Image: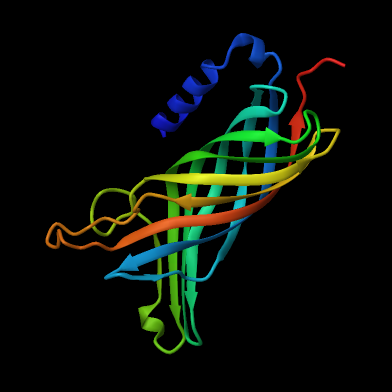
Length: 217
């Protein structure tokens, strides 16, 4: 968590004072739709999408009339759902995520914008719930542990983010983004160093937001 906040502060401090005077601060909230990519033995599978929430703050600093740098601090729910006729396995992972996006604005004050950038996430909590109608004695409901042990999930998650949206004249906006996890959040067993299996997060979200303009009218 300290790494995320330190990186965000350093990136903002590198913005020139003349640019800071023109920055806007905004809020966003919406829905996330997440799953994971699982690879093992050359085979790749993906569970069904799990709906969650995403919300946060962003700072938009103009770099030119059409380009801006937009770091954000978001709470986002990731995970997956696997189910059939009798069983259901739902994993919910809660992260604090910081994307470092660079945006292109078709118009300076309103209109379409697109962007991309890296992201870093920090796992704060999680829960797995497994239910089996035929064998209820196998039901599971437990908290996720983060760490380096085989039965835990890695806390840090790095990714690549792309987004697009539309900003209205009065500061309201609507946007969507896709985040592709680049880190293997699973831990390998020391007894099987040749294990090449990976588990990577990914999600897309739809958000509405509002930017508080710092420009004097």
